[in-house]
Amino acid sequence: MSATTGALGSGRSLQAGRASLASILQGPPRVPGAGRAPEGRCDAMPTPGVVLEQWTRILRGSGGQEFERQRWPGPGPHTHPPVSLPTADIISTVEFNHTGELLATGDKGGRVVIFQREPESKNAPHSQGEYDVYSTFQSHEPEFDYLKSLEIEEKINKIKWLPQQNAAHALLATNDKTIKLWKITERDKRPEGYNLKDEEGRLKDLSTVTSLQVPVLKPMELMVEVSPRRVFANGHTYHINSISVNSDCETYMSADDLRINLWHLAITDRSFNIVDIKPANMEDLAEVITASEFHPHHCNLFVYSSSKGSLRLCDMRAAALCDQHAKLFEEPEDPSNRSFFSEIISSVSDVKFSHSGRYMLTRDYLTVKVWDLNMEARPIETYQVHDYLRGKLCSLYESDCIFDKFECAWNGSDSVIMTGAYNNFFRMFDRNTKRDVTLEASRQSSKPRAVLKPRRVCAGGKRRRDDISVDSLDFSKKILHTAWHPAENIIAIAATNNLYIFQDKVNSEMQSRPGYTSLACWSQVGRGLEKHPEGGESGGVHGKTFTA
Image (cartoon, rainbow, N blue to C red; front, side):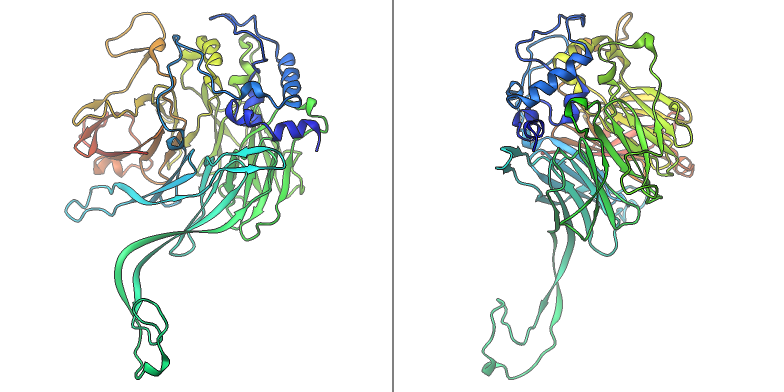
């Protein structure tokens, strides 16, 4: 193992400061002893060429102990003191299963919590069922790699459901190094009337058995059993950032910063490397893999994104090693808009195929983009998520917020997209009407009968009464993980240690429209939320908040 690889693999500091090599190369390093640039000025920072050289030197040196501590740069217009919250309770991933009946969340403590949708009430047949806790289990434990002196966190990075084949459910959960396949089953009956066992399960004396009886199954309280079926380990040198199940239901892939591996669900001791972008000399490393996903219908196609903002569509029929992509999706940069932070904010943090398989949705720091698989030159749609932060990039860099990785999601009909933002805001964009809305997931604003009006952030100039100044945004409250029900207008929002589930119920006329999704106000009524669509008709939305 080279000195560079050893430093990369042995730095707990990388987990503490920048959780992976991808995060490191997305932004300039803080060189030990270097001062911060003054507010509003970036000319005191090193050039990107020097940045990469400094990162390589730090990683090859002492293991980067400069990043050992978690920093808070102090009070300022863009930073807030850390909230006293157990790190283990922070939600790190959210995922619906293929039917939407189950919702799984993972947290930094290695736990997986599964929510199940309740059946519709007989008294109110048109009411939608709500989600309640179904099962909770510990998926990963903290480990230590003695060969590399590497501490492996228990944090759940991704969860992916497998298509249901029988009465049982199955999901994949991964931390930085190890992927586990879990089976979830139900048991509501127990056998009684054994001939050779007593009621406590002990074997009887055969001399006492004078007659034979037929064992029977008797009802019992529902028990949900979760058992590990497979453990896929030792497949990655760097931190796993994404997993994706193939449409053939037999294989899946896992991606780290430099490689993508293909696994068979029944084979745990080997995998096939299908992408490897690690250069012979680590000083030549220019980009890293940030996310990857299989095509929803074609088992030979997959896409992966990079820290340079590009997407590469690969075809596994062309070659065993897909280093040569089939298509490269990359938007040309406007030289007039180039700045010191251009490469950092252009890094793609998430990529999702549409349900139809025709489009791809990507999220970078400031925008979400929709790409057509038939057009590589530029995205067909670009939506600004929080463009008001463009003038605050220096402060965001100082507080490390510029390295946050936001996810994105499609609705069931691919007509609306959703992504998170700061201050517990999340954004929705209607692709048909080009309308957008900013909503807030907050327990304080979710009072009974209180209307959750669309929020508006004011970057300057004349402010309305309910506008929020960009300087008053709380950057410690961020929505990084979101999920949309595959068929209905139900969304799951993870805000720190809170999980918000909003359920849209519109009148029958609107429900009859294919793919209808209304961008409107939300308000809580008792246990649920009520919604007032744009047309004036009164609908309802049920919502729940779960706190770790």
